[in-house]
Amino acid sequence: MVAVGGDGTVNEVAQGLIGTNTVMGIVPMGSGNGLARELGISMNMHKSARALVKGENLQLDVCKLNDQRFLCTSGIGFDAMIADKMSKAASRGFLKYVQLVVQESIFFKPLDIRMKIDGVLIEESVFLITFANASQFGNNAYIAPAASMTDDLIDVVVVRKFSKIWMPVFAVALFCKLIPKLPFVDCYKAKQIELELADTPYYHFDGEPGKLNIPAKIRLDVEKIWVRSGR
Image 1 (cartoon, one colour):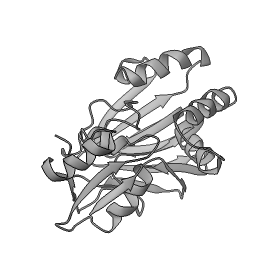
Image 2 (cartoon, rainbow, N blue to C red):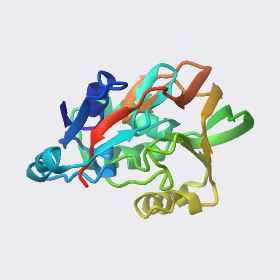
Image 3 (cartoon, helix red, strand yellow):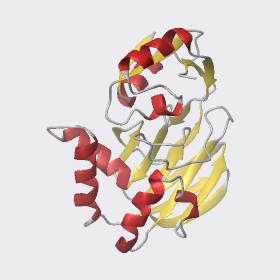
Image 4 (cartoon, rainbow, N blue to C red):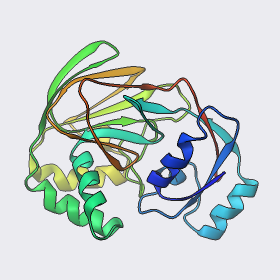
């Protein structure tokens, strides 16, 4: 079964294949293509099609926020707000994403959150929180460089509120795999996260917007999915 599109399309196709022995192939045609990049699949259509024949089969973890399954990342905060605005924009693509990020970062207010990571209570004012199965959002923007899709763990990246003068540094760190080195970032690995309070109506899953229901549980699905990699 082949998904032709971006991470949202891949997520939709995956919903019917999780827990089965059917392998999902990907021909990336989206704006971010996070899962395809994570799997080493070329952004060139001919090369990605060749990988459908010659690639290796991998069994990946699947995560859930409440009942919504995701393969790459989910989260709340700034990136979730951008995902909501991108879904309503007249055009898509990387340049539109950059435009929204620059525009919205000026006025964005941090969120007050309370959550438990494997039972440990955390209360913070945050810019964003990412629950990562994969290491990147897409476009090689690495929010959780240490994440693995086969380790039966969820990487939790908590970006606490920070001065806006750090925004250019944050942007560079995303593309240089340096997010964990920033002084306002905390990283965890967990089996389950309980989100008890979050002052936002938004969350995203694999780049798609969703309406957040609190309390929320983020955990590993009992089922996995087979995919064809580009390696």
